[in-house]
Image (cartoon, rainbow, N blue to C red; front, side, top):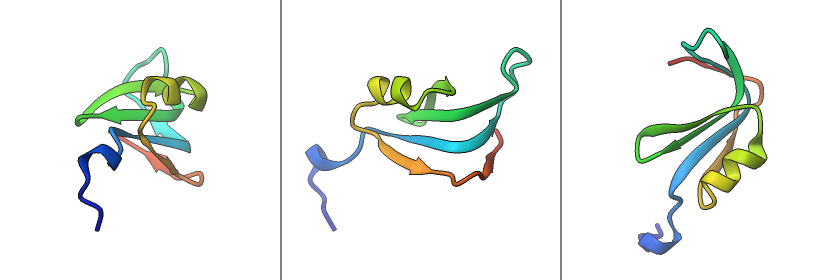
Length: 68
């Protein structure tokens, strides 16, 4: 197990899924970014999420649905 803090991801990006939100303006999204336990990105652009969370672990949802 690698315990080096400098090599650990700073967050997680979930993509390629159906992210259900509680926002009527954006009820579904394809990408969710989380950092320090907080949602920092909800949208459809993996590229935008990757810019915000450059060291995040990227997790392919393979079409699965995520709900709050």
